[in-house]
Length: 285
Image (cartoon, rainbow, N blue to C red; front, top):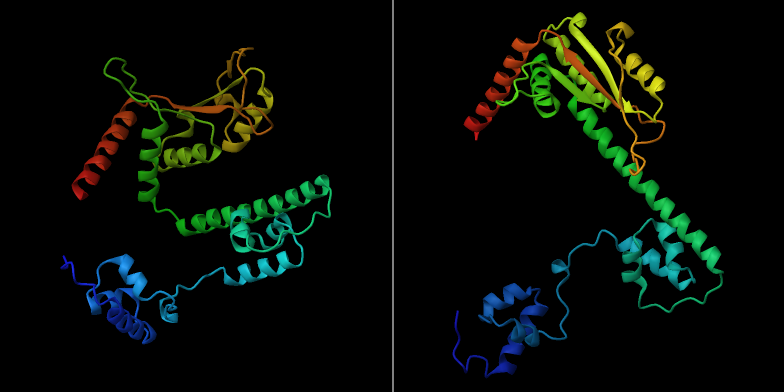
């Protein structure tokens, strides 16, 4: 809304009204609407020096931590000590106490570094606890899977990770490769649901030649509870001395390949099921 040039000439009169409204518990927005003052600079000048009413102040969840941080700072604590004690970020501590005098250094750099490490380790423990809590809460929210739910999960899992037929390279057979033991278990449970006989399944371990090959073979055999006669010869990836491998350590066990014999018909049904999921999703949208 536009105002005439002389709209705010009676500034003192407007200020008296604005101050009276402010003291009466009005917010800036309410004063603006009441006096039709839509210039924020002038509105702020009219109520300058008048504190806002309590009801307009936002509650601050960290007020207690802030007060405690200031108490500790006045006692001579460093930022690192306050971080470790309260589990707060350094930026928050700095914001809360930056106007207070800096305590004199009473520790060596090594001692200060040790305190900083302690604070960081405490922060990491808090983060890890939060991370694990989130994961556990999400895990419990799943509950039991119905056969239909497992069926749909398996179709999506295969279409994301399994081998697929190409117009230029016909591969109408079911083959699934993954290094995640959880993915392997779900895929095998899906095959069980579909009634695929275990005698039709063949397994191959794929792993880097410099890894613990025998240990990986034993691991996968125990994980899936399959007879070793159902395992093909392990496929070894040749070592390139110019490459720095990151997939190392005791938990590296390569990948497991699961192939279903005589699975052309099964593959066609999987592709059809996936198209049905896509079509149903499109229709729902």
